[in-house]
Length: 72
Image (cartoon, rainbow, N blue to C red; front, top):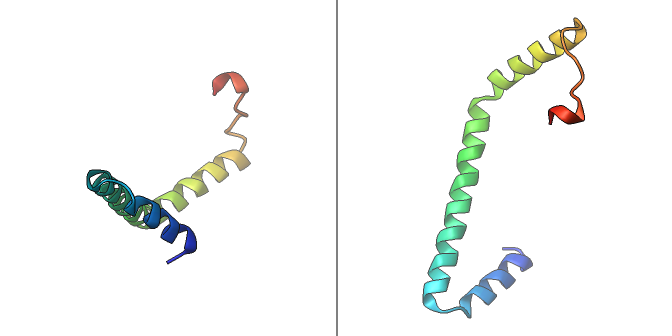
């Protein structure tokens, strides 16, 4: 465990029990969310690579145009 995480847990341990539980649920949810994003991106690697190839081909064939500030 890192020093920063240890410090966070030490500070959290001084909170009332209900706040500790709120903090714990938030931390667990964040970890699970990160795992899910990693899984989803891992599964879509081939699709993203194909999309990138198509975009690069369009660019090389002059089928794209610059994005202006007004379009953002």
